[in-house]
Length: 322
Ligand SMILES: Nc1ncnc2c1ncn2[C@@H]1O[C@H](COP(=O)(O)OP(=O)(O)OP(=O)(O)O)[C@@H](O)[C@H]1O
Ligand code: NI
Image 1 (cartoon, rainbow, N blue to C red):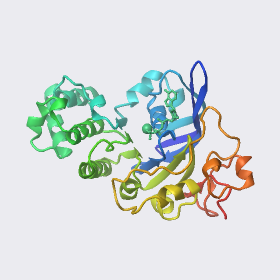
Image 2: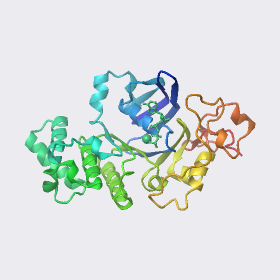
Image 3: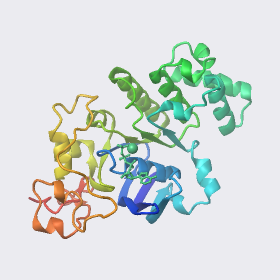
Image 4: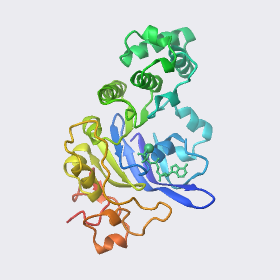
């Protein structure tokens, strides 16, 4: 197993209150696997990503759990070691490519600089490889693009450059937080395909955060469904999308006209998400659930096999056998 998150809980503290953003999150990512993380806004997807990267804000407090990467718990690693994994072994791509790029540095130099830093080769050779990596992310005329500044490129081109940057080390794990949300649908498709191909070629695992179940259907082998900072269901893409078990997953999928179609953001389901400052004792989804039982308001369910004996398909729901 490349990455194993176990029982991870994260709280944000402020003067007034304490927001429990993640509650006992557990899931894993295997070598070469693309795992989709889905869930409505505020469900804790980005906090999970930032926890792995060691980029949580100062007011965040990891109250329980471990994040084991290649068998080492990142949370107990010296800060320096964790930092050196980031950008090298663990790459990242975020929604807004501009944040990853230096605004006043030419594309070719940015890439060459990173490549030069991670490998023991001359700058000249690194620049040559930078051009090659631009070609690899299917940028036409890479020599020309290498001389441009980020603001001179379209959003889709910029995100390709960021992917080239993230893949240049190359990483064993790529954490992509809604990498294509800001792009238009046809470009989204191309950029995703590109990430998928690069990952396959290099054996890179991807943790892909997305709002788009069509994207999951297309590129992910496994899915983790999050709700209010908890994993409520997980399984192979086939299991989760075709035999969803949790009422929340069912609601998400039921609201979609066509799963195979990309570019359909998750629709809002009725009701409000729970107050993360004051988590309910029972199931977090119970107040919005159309099939809740008396026990759902009292006791917290845990992840258990969705059908008896299943090792992959797990769900946290008292009504799972009904
Ligand atoms: N620095 C912070 N201080 C306080 N609360 C925070 C902070 N960062 C995140 N949170 C809270 O943690 C919860 C989870 O946020 P997160 O950004 O992980 O959601 P998300 O699933 O990525 O949502 P989206 O789909 O909108 O990106 C939210 O309720 C958010 O308000
Ligand atoms: Ni997010």
